[in-house]
Length: 343
Image 1 (spheres, one colour):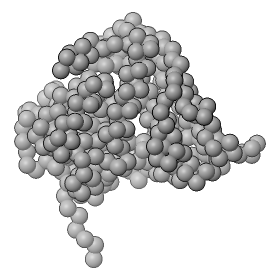
Image 2 (cartoon, one colour):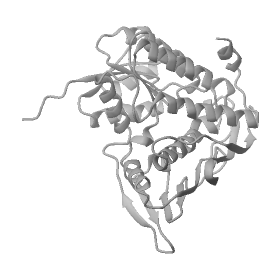
Image 3 (cartoon, rainbow, N blue to C red):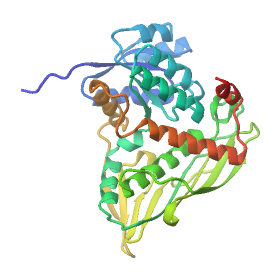
């Protein structure tokens, strides 16, 4: 007989587009279900809850006070992540927060400190790291299937017409290509370096960055080359101004590993050696891809952990620290940064 799986009930804050994928993925995780939904747009929250067989609550406080909620998933615009993460931690509710956890290193440090002081689980939802394709590619890299790491190259681009009212273009909502999509180029760069360096990402030794700014002042497109010890580099482009194959290529002394299309949600990988055709291996999702990060969060919370061993607090801090440094180089600033520093 199979052991009965204990129910795990999620509260959801920010029932927007990405939250649908989370809610749908719950059916692929044993025991997981959606208990309650809170959104500032009451009509939208009610429709979301009805679609996913849950209930809409009148306030964030009501959701966080519900003893039946085991953890909360936060999927608001990332400019508002911090206020909800803080409220959840203060209420003692474990948190899985969409990427980027918050827009600045200063705010991220304060939330990590709070999570540790309160001994409440906190994890940034960088779901790519929990996909089957990355598990397989990680094994290849650790086993030296392509030799010594030399460089990386990637893109994440799609076309979005400028609209000053859209969160993607709004400085007040921490818009811009880097925080919205470039975070994946950075996160996977760090992941590759960790696989090939005994689990520890080498220190960044320099960066070359250029950007095209939108009329609102956020980055419409950004290109960067990051430099690491031994001449290793990672070059990437992210932008709302064009389309690309959105591949991620990892070059070694004896070959290349490639996520050939939409690398952040890869379901196949390629290994390239010499002039031979690519060797493709399929690694499909179990569900829609979000199930891996959900299962990891549930496992860690049930084990009484403060953070995920696979997506540690230090990793989230390092990524947002890189994004802060890149934004400084191209002159992108958000209007709320001054108040964050003062707090």
